[in-house]
Image (cartoon, rainbow over all chains, first blue to last red; front, side, top):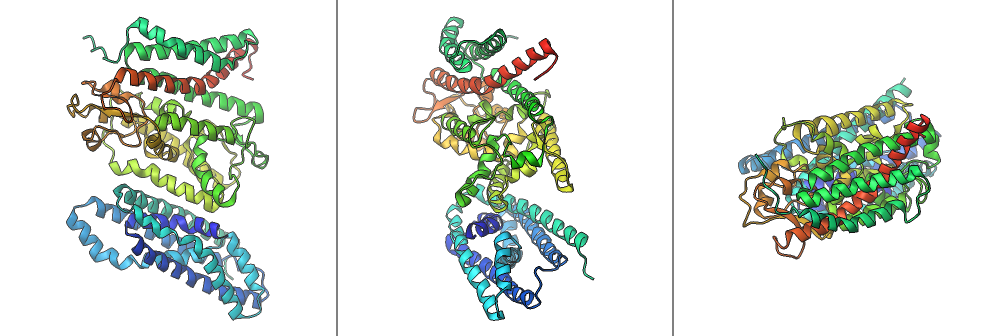
Length: 207
Length: 385
């Protein structure tokens, strides 16, 4: 299950860490922020699972997924803008690079991992569905949230080695590869988000 | 005006004599060491052996590599698609893959899937491709072993001597007399590595070979999913557009192998094999005048002013020999790692050509013989199979 989570979060986190080209120490902060966002997502689900169990429903309404389609598209837009703009910054002169990094992206440098973590945390994948079904059967809100907290801890272990990508930061080409990958991942999230929204609208609009 | 004779060219007698080992080896390998069963088989083996040995002789006697290599390489790609499609019609009655064939695990494996199977294999101990592990046509184990062997011996030379798709854009890149697009931003040469990173991880996340499912342009000339849904229709548009763009239009406009140089994740992975392999391409600093002719003709953007100044090619070099043939100073040559840059260039080239031509002959030879047999069958019976 953890391996699956690594494979789900890896495409988002690995390009980001490569493109930022920071040391392992700073990457730990980024990964912790990412995990923080993911934790918030899971805790939200802990509450929802309890609510679903309480209401004796077996599944969430279909239109509910459209919300996450929108979240995916937001993430995609952020990633694509990140890929294009940091590309311009790294291609530009030293002055434009420092101005760019100093004035704009410094603020978002911490926002992106948090948002990324939150959105991947809210992602409905197969291991997650299993966990959700199990949590919905639990007797109280506290136990349901606790279940998701443990689910988060168990699956996060597999993400912890990612800061080691910082050891490769001296390779300029890897930054470019990371940036290009971020753009490609953005395109994928854009597609996935649109599919979720279309499916949500087509199969079950809110009444 | 008579062109300058290459210093790598051998006298005809010597070239003929040096062809003998290749003739023996290729005959043995292509016939499988078995006596010829019938006249059709004999003709197929004979013509194939002759064809590849004539090309090998021409490489030795002319001192030029790329022209003769490309003749076989391009024909190999075209004939592979031809035989593959015929085989699919023979087995299934269509080029398209049905869901039933997926369930039966009856999908031929190709080397481009390898980067997508490694991570899922490590994480789930299963192969995410619906092919056969061993036996049958293009099995997974056979492809893995052949790819690993070729990579160890040739490095990324695999992409110029062994890959059965590379000949497509190689061929189209030779059609125009001059390039309409002369420069491509250096950043795009790193795109295959980004795609490699993405497909390797996304295949593990989705437990499907994402490049094959969504991006592989060569599905246009081999096989593809039967269009039964909007998603598959979208996939079909994507891979046909990529084939038209990367394999036909851009190679004609740039005179480069754009699919191999700017897109293929397998090429990116195979680039790392250049670190393990003993052969590379070097320039002799005493002869090089930095004219940049080699960088202009390199089909995969592997020569830059920086690499030329350092006397080396980039890790993405496919060892096609085009730069060596084009160099007016004859400063570039095949090189064995650990030896001085200009050490015995004739002998080094000969060693490389023996190995690479043998790989090309063995890999392409099977396809050539299959195509010849089918064409003879067509003439005799009016049917390809």
